Image (cartoon, rainbow, N blue to C red):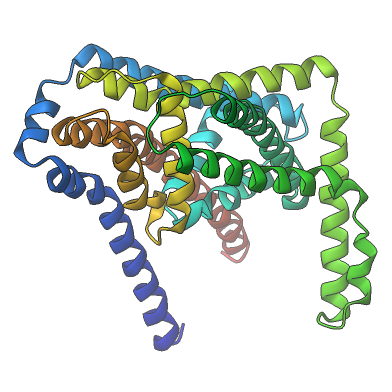
Length: 347
């Protein structure tokens, strides 16, 4: 390998490691900045039982997503028990949290499914259905929240901001859902008329797009009871996942509506997409802290946000990193075995 290429690869990994370090330390720095020493006192007094409950909710979310993946695949990636699906879920979530914008999550998911003889194109079709269920849940919830805030005086602060934010989020999710809904009717043949790709790229792109659409439609044709179970699991997952901040607020002595904490997390995670750090570090904490300001003291906010990020972000990396590394070493071992077999023939 040329020294220039090797140096570029090393620089890329060092830069990514720096970003992850900053992302992991951002909640700690912001906690001290927002609440000062009083925030650490609140953190020390946080009830251990509530913290265990938050950990249990996180584990429940992992298992709900793993079961949802098994139902959507429906045997197309070979026999898959809950343990195997949970390993894929943890590795995917670790990559999601460790890359800016969560770009590494889908890539790892498609790679792991490809090892189980499900091509990335077909895996992408299953992934799109999975995202479609998430979008349907948020459309349903946001529509209800938008109608509620427009018709009733909720007494929530930032009323105008909330209404516009809800309508904005709803618009974006509806547009994404329309793209998913109309995907089976897209004219994929237009790729063959493009002058920006060579013929090889045209055929490859068209073939993969057709496989993705085929997997998309095949997943939609699953029995209604399976699709209904996936929908129920989606609701359970997001209700449990977005209850973490509510429990953190209770742990620091706050008293806020569950709907407000749900909206706070949703808006904070939407804002985190504009952060260049993995996991949206920095913007997620600042956004959530700003929306909690009218209800809690700065010390309580600092402690609550830190606990929330420890369970919803740091824990995902801590639990998923060993699994992701194990998959990586397993892959290296599988690549080395055929090479060793070839060498043994010449001995």
